[in-house]
Image (cartoon, rainbow, N blue to C red):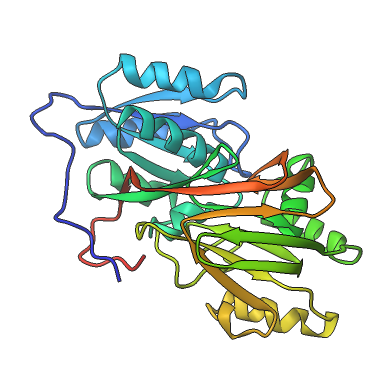
Length: 314
């Protein structure tokens, strides 16, 4: 159980404080045509000025960093899915501006782990009512990660999903079912600062958080701010065990399966013998990187805004 520090509000001594919202025009399946008007109106009602940054996929990190440095923003909000949250988090960390999330993506896993409501209007309450905390971040072969990365089956599904024409959870489930029928697990060698594993795996998840956007709870005991990350392994399993494993993943019982295990560490190297490059998804974005994949943690390196409640379980 993690308890937030005392309630924090944006500096009220600052007249008409400004808040920057980073909008991804293609995240999720939500019509954003009226979104800016809604956000601006609600912020104005509470004495805040909303400003907007639209991602384009071209030099977004550089442009967002410049925007934050040139302004005097009290906070920056990722209005999108986990990919948008990743973009905003890496820039917010660099320029030392606290970050919030308005969940608008297909999954929104990080916002769920932070206890943020999935209702857009209610999530906007974070602008004026929130608590601030520091969480860990990861480097996955030099790529910034704030939530979950993985190799194996889910990375393949995310890669297929990213190239599809349809967004939303339904499209993800459809692709997962199609790929499951022909998927062949790879053999992995994992060396951490604590232990070593070598063997076949259906999926290898590098977990700073707990929950995929699909509500699969891959790392039920993990903490976002404890200075450790977990490598969660699902080993090959017979088809008859699939429903049981899925049930365990949706009910926080990852460790109860004979086909799962977790490695807790602060540094790791993950390779697939015989492969020079591997597919990895990082916070919802598929990437091809050199093998071995290296992972390191940066403890409490990002300030985030969560619900203003007495106790929030992370």
